[in-house]
Length: 505
Image 1: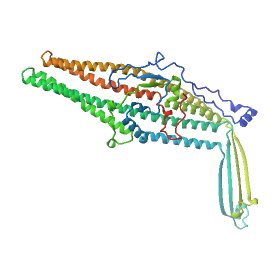
Image 2: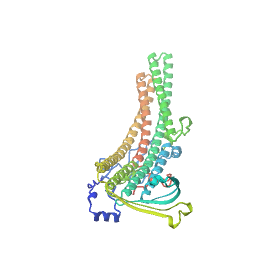
Image 3: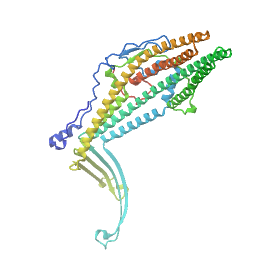
Image 4: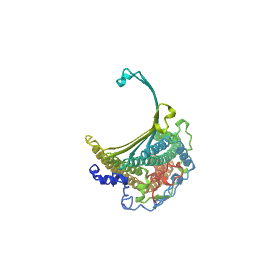
């Protein structure tokens, strides 16, 4: 992944070779080469993702089809076909402070890059000095001479240029360019994380609303059953214990509501944070599971394209590039530094004569500096740069592995989610049917109250599990888009000059 450079011997190169380097303007140190993508056939153990998931006849139970090699839309969240979710995303992309910080960091990196490029050009400065001085004759060893009063005006232009003979400056520019690339991909990573987090939080909010609604419905049904039991108790058809047990069941169901409502408020506050609003000032649409549509066609990128699509992988690739360039900087520091300095101007007692031909002064200096002994500082700095590049290469490799893990886990989860929803829907239907049957039997005296209570608990558990299973499919669908990179290369809402080159399709 990272080519280990040969140990530097440039300080011992013969003069003809050094002269060739000067004329050619060579850049010492290893040239960066982007690591090859992993050679793997797919994201799953068998190398192939399933063509489609299971389906069940209910909202959110549609089969999802996997389109291998399909491109990802830049605004992937629009596939949920929810105007409220789209509006939420627009607010967040316009007002989120984390995005503002990432955009400012990119501008900072670009300005630092522009400043670094200035090292390729001569440094030119101008100076003007006006001096009036009185000097006693004793200063010249002639005390009998009266004091000398004189005025001297000088104006000069100074030019200094360090010849980038071994590419040290160019490697510094290359390193700074890599840091700008890092910030560009960091901005894309911030966009991706924000949109994925908003989608997940909105789905969690919708799930909590559905759980609260289901719990309210169950509590009302249990209260209706309690009313029946109380009438039967008044008529002597049941025991006081049955009444108390049903009352306990009703209160136990209602006791879950405060926690669910608190979690709902927390999700609303989280969404407020994402859109850059204070909790008390946030007013957003109440998204429900019924307002979301499950995307049925899911893109699955080719493994060879994933490393180019993931912003975090590209961030670590930029850090690897930067570390590689720093080896060249450290190598150039071991070699001679050539500097040309010149000045041109004039000196005269009268300001009007400063620019006359007779007052011209000029100077030209060429200097070559070669480090001879510094306690091994420069050598060890170069070795440290090599080690830093090896660290960056290992971090890059770990990030790539994590990216493939994310995609694999999400693909498995989507298949499992569909199977879980099928099972949850069947369990909910069975629990509801069982409760209706047992309640009818209890009213006719053919079932005990304990059977009713058990059926109620089963029905409550199955109803909540069905809501959670349905929401999980939406959440893992959003997670797949995030794991694949989010399609940032197809987005059009990024300011000009801040978008990096997209992946090669």
